[in-house]
Picture 1 (spheres, rainbow, N blue to C red):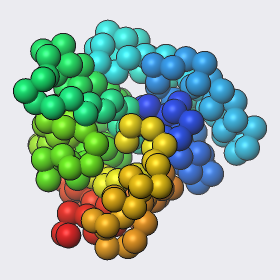
Picture 2: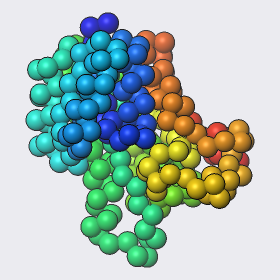
Picture 3: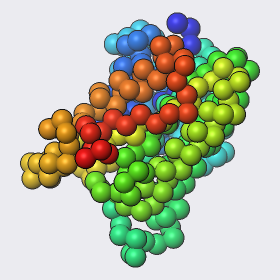
Length: 250
């Protein structure tokens, strides 16, 4: 496979992005890492190259800054084989109650979790259209469907609902160009975006709402993303796949 997958938000040591980048590399994808954490991204790129012997390149960018995104994707295109897949995983959480919410906090969350997906997708999709092939997966959340309920509150839920709408609209527009666009909506996953490592009491509280009797792990979500980016998912587009242990139907 001489194609590349771009993964945003991959540098977090306990994050879904890292697990996804490692799994895609294991499957033979060349990997482009885009993360605001430059040292973390470079360290992961070196680890992937050593473990999986694929081309890997890391660039530092804030996905909420469109000019930084354009420059970063230009750099990835120059360094790697054609960009054929995109996993939009970069995101921030916000536990601030709505009536205590500042405008700055609202924009911080929306700009990263929704506008960031838009900026990266629009730039990468242009490259995919030129090649007549592409797979795009963006991270939403069951918070988009339930109005929160795990850790983050209103702006996070709004942004993640926007990701689902963006996914459906892009599936319509980009399908004729050979590009599929889907979303994955995780439930409670043991990552730092949940507000840090889970205490035993908090873990037990989360599990009480789940049908599978455990909190999700990063590999659970990474596996779903990797499937939707694969040729096995060529006839799936415009969908939101819940990876939530049954939370949404509880």
